[in-house]
Length: 196
Image: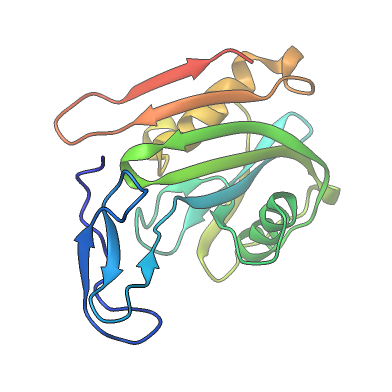
């Protein structure tokens, strides 16, 4: 059972207050409407993105929004309803890097249980090597492994994706990476890699 506080305080069906309880036949705390009894399920958010290559370099975007404003990241964001993971990843590339991508395939799946997120990163080719800063981006740039600003990367999942990309060049076309990333206040970052 999770000790995370539920964020749904009012019923999405009737607007009444909710309470935290374990519904019959369930095993987790849920937000349950005190009036109509509707059970609100909170599930992990899916984040999709792309690791795009052009002539041995990878595309990074400098964030123009919080969190981590001014830090470098891979183009990625939350999936929208009624889109596939690959479509969502390509949309994020268009929105953040004004770019198109080709030959996308799943590269990695990362679980971030402490913030209830699942990342699906795709690998592909940056079409024509062209990119520009979108509304959520200060700058875009292609980096070789030696040029990457490792100390200025926005999130551990970005660092892990880039590390795996450069460590496993020969396998990147056929192997999907899978890991759990734990980032807890006051504790060192923990990455548990799973073999495929």
